[in-house]
Length: 269
Image (cartoon, rainbow, N blue to C red; front, side):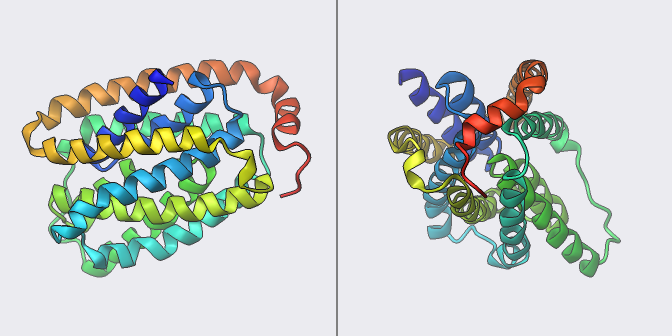
């Protein structure tokens, strides 16, 4: 459990510093460090991520850093996408979800490495940007529901680049959206799994507690860290974990149907 606490602190620190990234580590930690079944780990991840993001957003809300207009654009399609992604997840083996997660981690690694070079054309029309934000909100929601990640690695760049929010406001707004999307995803996954009793609430509490502490510390030290160096280091870390998941889960694909039967215990979606 010490390793779990350390992992939760890393998750929280990343959410507090970047508004993204940390939640994508939660499922691998639950599956490979603690040995939880993949589908149950995804539901647990959503409970953990929603709690950490909600707690981490409180100081930003208090300071007036959240852009509620951006939340209004992102959240409705995001919530719909999350529900749809969770429904879709109930029809595929857990190994497929983990492989998609690995792909998302590769994208996150690349975006985090190159984010500082992103730019937007000055002649972009406001209406086009609004449509792009709504479309990205839907896409992020589907990813959240399907693999149990907050999607901040997509939300923060979208808010910073398309909505032209300062980085601090993008991070603050991202945390609110992540909390909302993850809560809806948890609700749907719990229904598919047959109830909350299948989740390990002790582990969820440990992760959420240490993660909240980490997110508050991350928020406090946000302006004091070398952001470029941190992002590149974390990007390399994500790349390594994604590679591990791809190798491990690709080897288990022939047994995916057997693992799925065991995981769901015959519960109908």
